[in-house]
Image 1: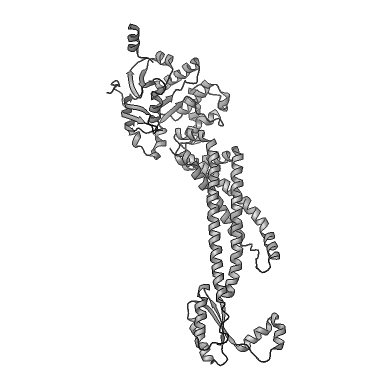
Image 2: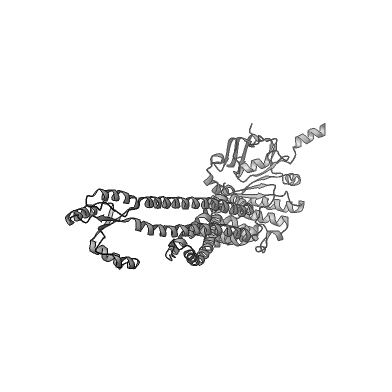
Amino acid sequence: MTILRNLRFALNSAWQSFWRNLAVSLAAVVSITLILILAGVNLLVGHAFSQVLDGFRDKVSEMSINVADDTPLTSVYAFKQELQGDSRVATVRFVTKEEALAEFVRDPNNAVLSQQIQGNPLDAKLEVRVRSLNDVAAIDSMARQWPGVDPTDPTNYQGEFVTRMLQLSQWLGLAGIGLMAILVVVSVVIVMNTIRTAVYHRRKEIEVMKLVGATEWFVRGPFVLEGIMTGVIAAAIALSLLVISYPPAVSRFSADITFIPLTYDPTFISSLARDLLVGGALLGALGSYIGVRRFVRL
Amino acid sequence: MVLTPDFTARPVISFQHVWKRYPTGTEALRDVNLVVPEGDFVFLVGPSGAGKSTLVRLLIREEKPTKGKIFVEGIELGRMKRRQLPFYRRKVGLVFQDFKLLPNLTIYENVAFALRVHGQPDSFIRTRVAEALDTVGLSGKELTYPANLSGGEQQRVAIARALVHAPSMIIADEPTGNLDPATAWEIMQLFMRINARGATVVMATHNREIVDLLRRRVVAIDAGQIARDDRSGRYHDDSSKSQIRAQ
């Protein structure tokens, strides 16, 4: 019961203090909103790039091993089985010369070319999907050592491109984490100072609280709750602005930069909402906790 | 040397060879020994900077002694853990010269505040605040804000807040310092009534007239040391006065 009464007191006190010191509260809300917008943009850009990278990854993790015309089928099936037994390989599909030609002809991009083809110049192939992008090079070298491979055009693996993709994806990940870390530090400092200003205005109240026997957490509680409230309000505002501007920003980007296949992903909104609300609440709580510490200490 | 009279009542406060040196190097208290029995009324007197406020700050554990021990109701304050401090302060009623009221709370809320921080239920708070305001003669002013009260009335609110949780001890630091003589006398009568009900009162004061009129125990502090401890003393030492007169 005492805990509930204390919680009610803390909630009332936090609510009253938020409105009583409206100027300071609004300053904190605006600061956290701006930071959360930056964080949200970072998350959205990160998500968009990871979508694009996933698309590329899907493409480059699938490779074709071209089979020389004179390779016996038994050798092809034996190699297919060997690949299927490899833990690094997800799937292997054998495409005969005829099937390869049919696929080629079906592709509307090859309409002109397919009319000029005489006979079947295409190789039969093993289409291999590798589980991890990091293992594609190893599978490629394994394929090149297989005697049944077409020596003039063994595989369609583009090693340099994959390496660059891997590096780009690592750098983007690191940049995202670095930016997030900077945003977290900056926001905690801003919130801490804003709350410290609010606390400074109420130092007399804190002094009286301590003198009449309030525990440290009883004094700190309302400030931490006020910080959480500030953070959640800021997160809600930031989220609303991001949700409103996300679809037009994506369509504008897609229209201007067509070679990057950026798409609007409505399913990401729920995880963005969760991240921003939890992030805002944590930032507010942490900023308040640190900001009030010096004044609260008995 | 212990100057305290040998009272028969149970001691509630005991200073044993207490020294206090601030980080600035100022030695505020030097080898202070003092025993306050239960139900006693003690005036701490002395010139500004003598060490009265330091003694009060040590009693409410805003400071720790540099050397020596302070016991209050058997608890050694210097060794008290931080988490125990709020519970100690709940046993004590504190009154200050500047009242320390919260201007944005009504009189009722100011007094209730001391019980709210203890997590008491509303019904209990209502009863106790009404009793405390009645004791200090402020019934009917519950919804008034401190700014609309006189200095004496504000000090009465502070006393009500100090009383509301029925502490066994009241510590007051210059409670009449900001009040005119007539109001100061009213406030002192209030303290006397509280003491008559059984609470121990320790009061640091500069108010010579009141000390001389009430003739209670006087502990005179000078340059950080207890210079005099009279069971029913006056503000100034009678013997020194008679010595001056003789000269």
